[in-house]
Image (tube, rainbow, N blue to C red; front, side):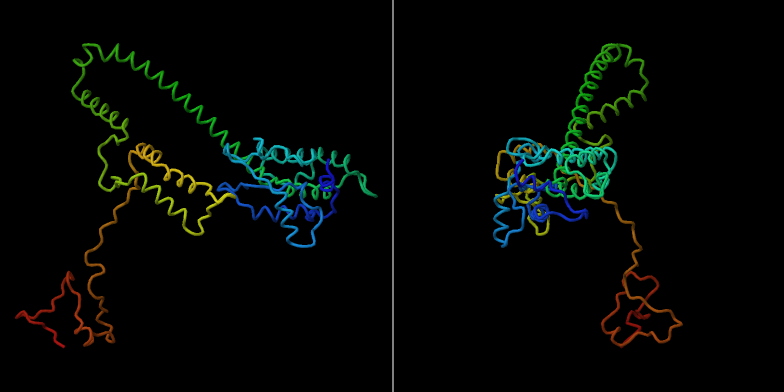
Length: 368
């Protein structure tokens, strides 16, 4: 065990919220490290290469962070070390006790939300901490608050939050992958079974000479409608008939859709994340790669049959007279009368029922 690692394991004060300089530096530096769209870091810092005490100048501190920086690989879709081990595996500079506590922290999700404070009451961790650190004068057992301080140090120094998130996303993706494989296997099994039964039905029923002769006309018509519906559904059309005018998709090419998505991704404050080489990470990076390859864009465009558009409800018909003309006050309001300006600018009375401004001879009954 190196000297720096041994210093990281030194007993902490009884106040659980106090961090060593090294752990506090890692906590602050990780907030500035670029993250993927899933909230995972693209790099980390080796705690064993960081200074144990605060340097005299900020430049020296920054240089120490650069020297301790290490990149993470996402070649397999999740963060890994250069040798291919997942990020949640044991770190090269991580003590065995810290990694064992991290494993307990990961497994605690099976019994409910993870709580770092509850781990300080773990009997196994208390017994190991007693063997490693012993007790101070006047203590008979290892105090829980002291263990809580050590675990809080480990939580920040060894990236428990980031590693646990990577672990959870991997488990979720693995579970989803297994579920999809089972669905595919079940679908294939059902397809083979249905094909075999349909073949037997065709031989014994449909090919029988008396099948259609004994069929009633109404039954034959219903059978025809069902067969037509099956044909339409199999090619992606609604079974009842063609799409309505409002549901008919616009003629939008795949390239235009991708360019629209790219323009959205390039808008400010959209949360786009870039790696250390300046390449876009996430949906924008994928769009750039597809648009940069004409052959790939053409192949994906052929895969699109149509673009679905949400149906719009028609607005209820309104009264044709609502919103037209001028609103008049009731007759018992003597203070509201038509002014000369109103008569000069004209009144919009088209479509207003029971109103006639023309006299008997066709001339205006009201003159300014």
